[in-house]
Image 1 (cartoon, one colour):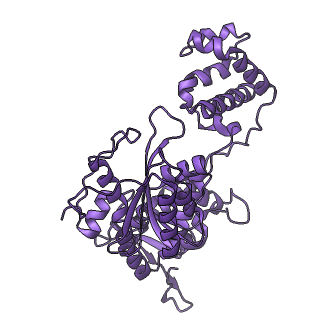
Image 2 (cartoon, helix red, strand yellow):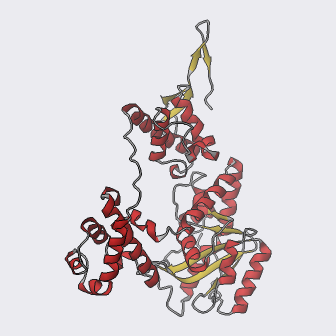
Image 3 (tube, one colour):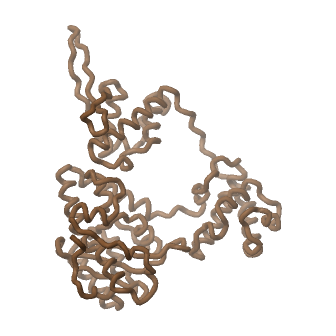
Length: 416
């Protein structure tokens, strides 16, 4: 079935304060809404917002509307994302959350992400909105308008229809997912993961931490690492001021190379590859000051972790494989459960290298422990064994190992 909706032209985006206020009032009365943003990110550090689309009301046939942020302040609508009394439904909202936090200082406290929800019911990791709607509702969405010029006016009927379809099916999609999550006892898991996503993407690290995003920073000597921190922090501030990608100010590799050798004068900057004469003339003194001040106060270097012992390295490999098998059997996307480094930290602790108490790993807390953590500990302790099982989704399964009783018999010990 193709996307539903009237054959006539879709409603024009709201361009007056009264229309925006009316939409916000209707959403507030409803208590929930779906939201999606169209924006342009090319050549910008923080994307420019081009359109705000929302849906609310009846789940099966919701009201839909768009707000034109180039004509009117969308604040009354987008601020509802930050209202804990209103449930916000989104899909793959990383970029939307980051934009709302940067442009409108909004952090969603009660958001649910349908892409995350899909990862907890066996519908794949990072599934696209169109594929999810077609899978759950049998509706095919035309995604041809995705990469159009959202800052040009007037918007075409095709653009508006595409944008409204992005929220028209959000309520029904979430309702199907919510029912399945309730059946599996995983609704709270998705709410927790959605909140974690929001907290991560709504937070912009301070400029002083920008150097950690550059490849090669950890291998620099202390003085050069300080110079890198200073120069990267300056570049971050300038990029935010001009709303340009940091690499447009000074390329990443050039930043690292300047920190590695720290030129003696501003004129020496011109010798660096990737740095134009115009950039040196405009920023030379600021860059040298950032390099010198940073080199004078290098960051504290973390103590390097010793490599895992051979036994722990083997355990980490087995734990990673077991995690993948458990996630496949439980139809949960592995990235939500644990990473390879989590498995290594668990193995390090079990080998006696991590000290006491157990490491503060997400894998050993909350729903992750319920799903996988206790089972991994069961294998590490020898209470369970990994068996080849052709009938299992991943070809292996975890089974309890029998314990020998005093009479020489075997007693089955259930895995947690």
